Image (cartoon, rainbow, N blue to C red; front, top):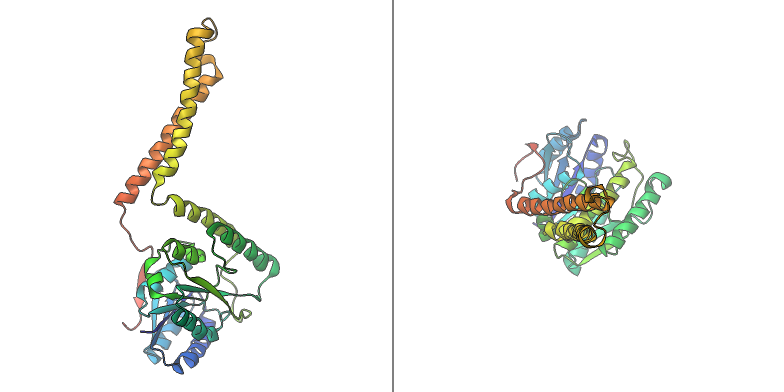
Amino acid sequence: MDLSLVIPLYNESESISELDKKIELILSTSKLSYEILYVDDGSKDDSWKKIIDISKRNPNTHGLRFLKNYGKSMALSAGFSESKGSIVITMDADLQDDPNEIIPLYNMVKNECYDLVSGWKKKRYDSVIFKNIPSKLFNWAARKSSGINLHDFNCGIKAYKKSVVKEIELTDGMHRYIPVLAKNCGFNKISEKVVKHHPRKYGTTKYGADRFMKGFLDLLTLSFVQRFGKRPMHFFGLLGTIILLIALLFSIYLGIDKLFINKSGRLITERPEFFISLATMVIGLQFFLAGFLGELILRTRKNKDNYIISEKTNSK
């Protein structure tokens, strides 16, 4: 199969039918073999009913429905797992992403051999204060920390080689950093394309202003995992060693001072250096213990999907 189109959605019943007609108009005139995979992230409206109706009319369209709302990362993860196309394209279901970008993105990955091409919404139709400015700060921080020169990490429309989506592992909130995850897996041919962005036609956004704070915290987590995720003892062990050395130095100082310099002075347990030494010993040992536990967890964990699919449309 040439193309898999993965569309995660949550409470977008008003836009699904219109979006599907636009996609079908574009893909039906192409010579590509394709599938359209809608992933309903536990919608509470008629989104799933619309997906069922669409899949009955079009054998190339399929749907997955989550038991509850797990978030966009899990919806993408499920779609990636089910996809069969040699190239996978993702887009949002709110009609703000333009379906006319599908074929150009497909051609960039196919003909120019990119691993990943991310959309860049250069001209946005969102709130300047609550979306545009925070988004620019977020993307700046992501560029600086990852070394990937993209203007819009969180753009919903992206194109991937199949090998990329099958290799990366998405956890909650990490859909914002798929290019970073791809790079960490060794996929370095990453580019971007300016794409059209449309004003929201139906409903309201499902994301609040807190998503940017969560995004920055996720960026810190990703940076830590990138460096020490496979070797937690290197981080915690180093800190533990430094802190234990501080404790050892204070202990040696107290011992020498009491035995040879100030024999008639205060008791060791009455001096502040004693409590500093004691506290740093305990903290250093705790860091070592955290490192050992991290290593044990890595070696004994079993990978498991973080979502439950309650229904599927016609089998593929």
